[in-house]
Length: 382
Image (cartoon, rainbow, N blue to C red):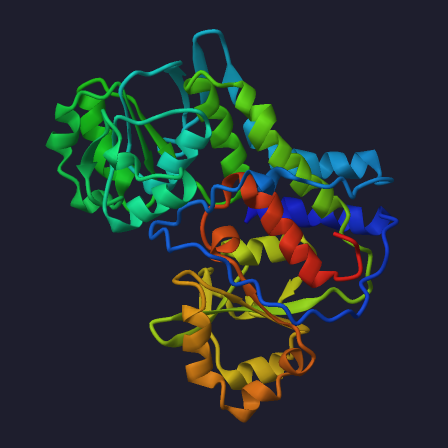
């Protein structure tokens, strides 16, 4: 929440001083359906280096305003310090400063999304997590099922720490363990590992700031610091350009981001990844006022949607391409309330690719921001 408040202040400064064009009223009837499989554990998205093909649309921006946005996105990465032999950072599991020696030889990475990030940062993992969702993620993001690589051993079939055999993992004698603070991973392994002298990095990965921080940590641990400029910082600069170029407009675009979960229609809030990107781009998420519990999604009815009257509707899918759209149409397609929604009648119902908005997009985060900016501001030249 502190992060979001800081960025909203920065964006307010950008919009107050920017000299960009207005919103426009163009319509786009396309649907972004994508081609990716579900990563299951919140993996980071595709293996398309084109995500870094950023355009600098921030010409003429006030440099002080840009500095506010730069600080928001890069401040956590800048807190990472690197020496000739070690990397120091704040561990998300303990909340304390942690120093890890470079070039660990036997790393256990026990969360699928973090495995993909470790490989993107130039590393390989001899000890890892398997299972259907993890393998699908590896194939999408790394380009192959790394559990079949020579020298790689699967020590658990789940990223959820509650299902781990800790003795089996520790018996492999890794010199470093990397895991998520979610799904009880860090909670399960940190104590036993500390008892035998194995350092454990706990990672909280919720968005771009976390991606940049942990990419910097990982690429320096793996011995590939050059990837910071080649990959992560390039992505960051693309996002900064996009956010800094949001048009000044009296009426910010309003939206609701739909998702179908267990045959229940829900709307993503600002606590979700697509909802956070929407906010950072100056859009108004009409589902947020109903989010007293601070959850990532809330149930919503067609009558609610009609009353909210959003400028546009999004469907953020996470399963097979077209599967959730079919689910949604089976639920509401014949309902006259759905058909009468202004966003539908004006052709502003779009699908958000799982690869960019549900999974951790990693080096494609700038593509996610640009895609949503194009929907929100179709005449702004993003």
